[in-house]
Length: 165
Image (cartoon, rainbow, N blue to C red; front, top):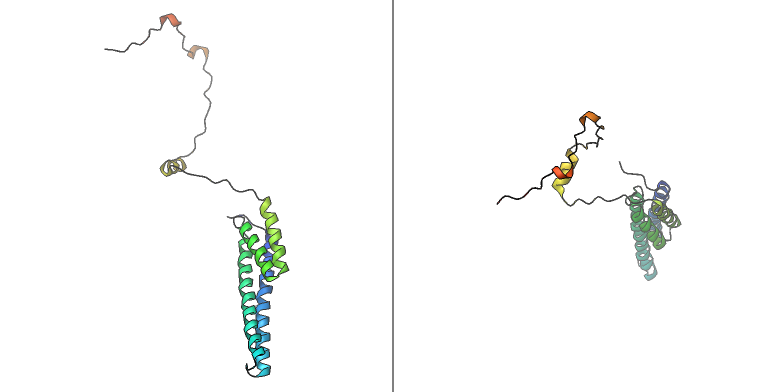
């Protein structure tokens, strides 16, 4: 089970992404209403209004979708910093104050999280054997009684071992 990231950043960024997407859809509706009331796209100013409006709407829709994606990244500790930085940058690009706040909260939360230690395995077979065999606890040997202690020989009685020729 993965650890939770910053829930506050996730929710604020989610709302900011939805806000950007609603703004994009609203711009499309304004452009369509403008074209519908005029009746045709004949004038030069109207052409630029339609092209600019649709480009701006697509811009906000794309950034809103990307902000939504970054909010889901902020749900997990592993990708919290990535999501927070993405949300902050996209919030600045789209002038979305909610995404900026969510990014700042996510970065502050990511700085408080200690990284998990990484395990590097050099010998895969040895690691598999270690995982498959149970770990044995080291038990201390009981101290022997006096009758069980072997007698020690003085150093004079020990003969050195000489190699055979």
